[in-house]
Image (cartoon, rainbow over all chains, first blue to last red):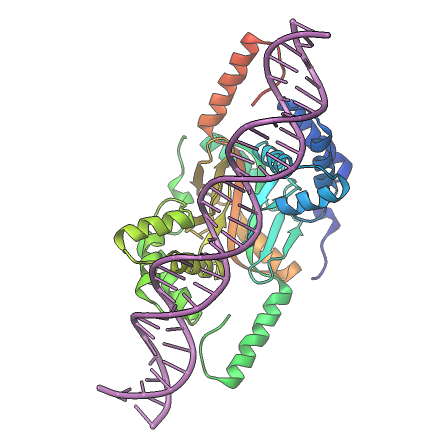
Amino acid sequence: MTTMPDSAKIQTNAPAEKYRRYLQMLKKAGLRLTPQRIAICAYLAHTERHPSAYQVYEELAATHPGISRATVYNTLNTLRELGAIVELSFGSDHTHYETNTQPHVNLICLRCHKIIDYYGDPGVDAVMERVRQEAGFQTVAVKLDLIGFCEECRLQRLDEIRAMARTTAQDKFL
Amino acid sequence: MTTMPDSAKIQTNAPAEKYRRYLQMLKKAGLRLTPQRIAICAYLAHTERHPSAYQVYEELAATHPGISRATVYNTLNTLRELGAIVELSFGSDHTHYETNTQPHVNLICLRCHKIIDYYGDPGVDAVMERVRQEAGFQTVAVKLDLIGFCEECRLQRLDEIRAMARTTAQDKFL
DNA sequence: TTTATATTTAGAATCAATCTAATTTATGGC
DNA sequence: GCCATAAATTAGATTGATTCTAAATATAAA
C-alpha cells in the first residue's frame, strides 16, 4: 500500500465541517432542519465509509427508531441534487454515496469492490476552470474514479494466472 | 456551448474500433463470441448515447427478437467487469453505461440529467501513473465526472432566482 | 388561535435486475 | 462425422432496493 504524502491532503474534511456544510446547503435550499434531517446529516458527516442508502437507513433506525425509509431516501436524494454528496456505483446492487466532496480520487476495485480514497493533486482545478469557460458548465462536485484492480487483487490475479498456466495451456485469464 | 478545440480529441473512438475492442476483450477472457454477444457489442459500439441496460435490451429486442433479458444483463455485467464499459449513475433510476473509455470528462447536469462528453486533457495520465506507483493500483478505466449545472440549466436557474427576488424577498434558491 | 404548508410515517407497490431450470448451441477428442 | 461435455441462451418467476401513497404530524405565518 506504500506511503501517501501528507502534503497531498490539502483541506481537512472534519466531521464538524461536513456537518455544517450539509445543514447549510439544506437551509439555503429553503428546507427545514428537522430532527430527522439533522440525524441523517450527522451520520453522513461522521462516516469514513461509502454507505449505501440502505445502510444509512438501517444504522439510523437503530438509534432513531421510527425514522422511515422514505425520509432517509428523500433526504439523500435532496443532498445529492444539491451536490452535497455524490452517488457512486461500482457494480454492487445498491447505490453508495460519497460523503466527501473535496477533490480526491476513488480507486474502485473491479474484483473486491473496495473503494480506496486517494488524495493527491489530480489537477482537477484546471479542468474545472476550462470546462466553465469553454462549455459554460458550473461544477458543484468532482468525481474522479479510477476503475481497475487494487494491489491485493492484482497480486491474487497474477497468482491465479500462474496457477492456471501450470495446469493447462489455456490462454484465458481473469 | 461555445467551441471545443479539435486538438483536444486525441484518439478516434470510431464504432469499428470500439466494436473490435469489445469482442477482443470478451475473447481474451475466454468467452465465446455468440451472435447475441456480437449484437450487443455492435449496439454499444455504435451508440453515441449513454444507454441504460434496459434500453439496450429493448432496442436490441426490436431487431433481434428472442434475445433474453438475462443475456443482455449478463453480457453488460461481463463487459463492465472487464473494464470495457463503465457504469454511470446520475440520480436516474436505471444504471446507464459509458461505452467510451477513452479519457474524457463527463459533465453531468444535476437539473436536467444530461451528460455531456467533454474532451480535453484532464491530466489523468499522471494521476494513473502515480496511483500505480504509490498504491499499487492498476487502472483499467477512468471516469472523471464533473457534477453541476449545464449552461442551459444555469441560465434558467439564474432567471428563476431573479424572478423569485422580484416577487418575494426570500433568500431561498434552486 | 387558526390556517396553510411542509414533513414524516407505515406500508403497499413498482420494476430493474437477478435467478432458475430447462433447452439449445458449440467444442474437442476419438 | 459422432458423441460427450461444457458453455450459453431462454422464458418466466423471483427478488429487493427504491419509490409511491394517503394519512398523520409538525412547523410557520397571519
